[in-house]
Amino acid sequence: MESVLASLSAGLSVCRVTVADNGGLLSSLFLTGLIGSVSHCTGMCGPFVLSQVAARMEQIPVSRMSEWHRLSGAALLPYHLGRATTYAGLGAVGGLVAGALADWAGFRFLAAGLLMFAALFLLGMAVPRLKASLSGASAGPSWWSRTVGAWAKPLFASPTGLKGWALGVALGFIPCGLLYAALAAAAATGDPLAGALAMLAFTAGTAPALVAVGAIGHFAMSRWRAPLMRWAPLLLVANAGVLGFMAWQLAA
Picture 1 (tube, rainbow, N blue to C red):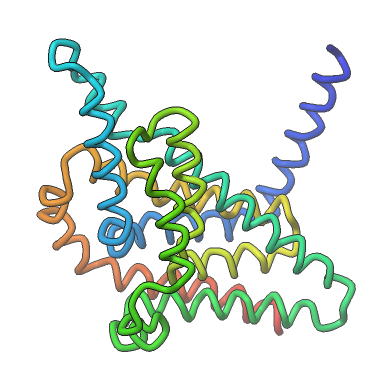
Picture 2 (picture 1 turned 90 degrees about the vertical axis):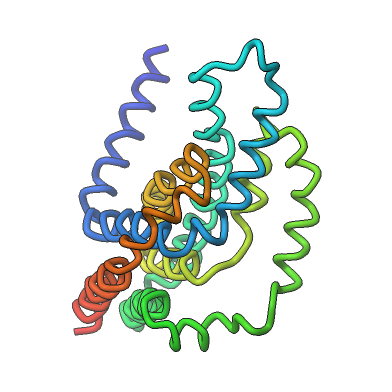
């Protein structure tokens, strides 16, 4: 038992050091998720959330329906944990791959390039014309998106427990510009743990808007989304500036 506690304590110490060393990036990715979810995730992932909430509510008899059931159904905790699993795994892989090149003399330029790539995609989320050129919106859903959607479709029938978690894991692989930006920034750490924590911070930022969609519905959310959308581009540009400054510091 003491060895287990000692291992946990050592692990927590490593996490604290990693968070302290990468606090600026983690904060930036949390804000990226928080801001980007209002302008992007509610439109792209909102239908997934509403479908799950509806399916969960259908499984509860009217006689047993309560406010707790409504709130827990809107929270979709297994789904968000599934997304966090995928995003953290991708962040760890990105950090591992970049970390393998840490001894390379040009690594700092690679890390700076990844941060600039992330900044560019955030600018793309804020500037419509740039967003269109980056995302290729006119091309329609990619083969990968259709494949992931087909695999995940059966899980929508009962998105609770492990099935809800598996659905979150699957849908976490659907690509989007905001995710690309977060992954590029996470990979720039060159550390698997830092990359995973960075993506967990991003996931935490995206959760509030999606929970709000599940709780009050997409149409109700759109009433609040409009005024927030006026400020979201400016905040995304500011966040892109933070990542760009971090890239400049690495390359200087």
